[in-house]
Length: 202
Image (tube, rainbow, N blue to C red):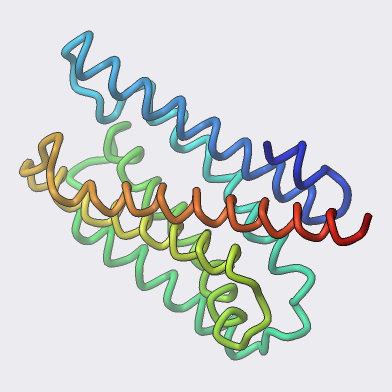
């Protein structure tokens, strides 16, 4: 749908292709998680599903950057510094909550999530700044809040998993559900806007 309605021309077109890659990776991760837990009855965390989840982050990063690039002149350097500092603080706090008992593969994999979250948080914060400055549309704001909901879910999940108190069906999963809802409505809103523009141009 992203390729059909949004095209692949220009920076935004490439961004939507990256968004499609992100969606495919995370859908594969969710399906793998379900099969592992519900069918195979094995622990789904720190498994092949994480490969899909982590593979989606580069696509998401490229997507967020693609929408910041056209407005880069509207972003002051101070705001860029603030977003970087906030991201570093998030990563440090997340790693502190998870803890580093040893340099094992599962520990490195657990830390990878907050690190990637922190990296992507930089363009997300800049995007929210532009939104409140009325430089972006409703689609972009919905997707940004959807990404923030994902980060919130990741942070809570990492803490609960490290404390051995997480279980499937936990109320914290609402953060991920809201993330999906906001992302879907963001894409739908943009699709609807593009359809109206095409109709008016005829």
